[in-house]
Image 1 (cartoon, rainbow, N blue to C red):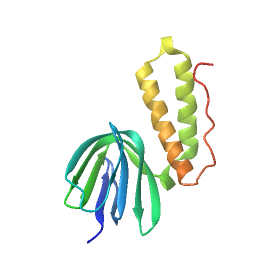
Image 2 (image 1 turned 90 degrees about the vertical axis):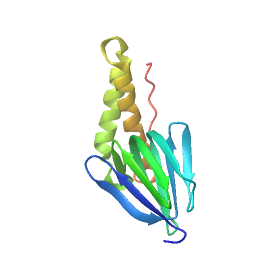
Image 3 (image 1 turned 60 degrees about the vertical axis):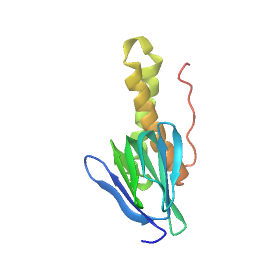
Image 4 (image 1 turned 60 degrees about the horizontal axis):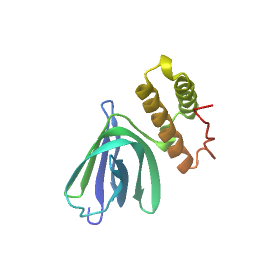
Length: 146
């Protein structure tokens, strides 16, 4: 495993990824960070965000919905609340979730705003990951305050 990192992405439901990879990028609570082989030990909280890893020159994208990451001795373990590889994302469901969240946010006085904003962030990260992976062309922005 010289020059590689063992990446494991685990959710309460399943093992999403277990592969030896060249590098990993994830979104921590203080921003995006990268991990290469022989990285110093690290423990970090993750926010809803994009993740990606490179293996043999090919980049794979994933949506990571919060959790924690540990890096130790060329192994990176992500314990995520939820995670999906780009090819697993249900685009129709993500678009519908985005539209529902935007509609709820327009009715601020009748809803739990924090919950609706979190739903919107989850939907948007799924769509952004699908776009980066080339599964959709673009995400059309829509104003919430209309």
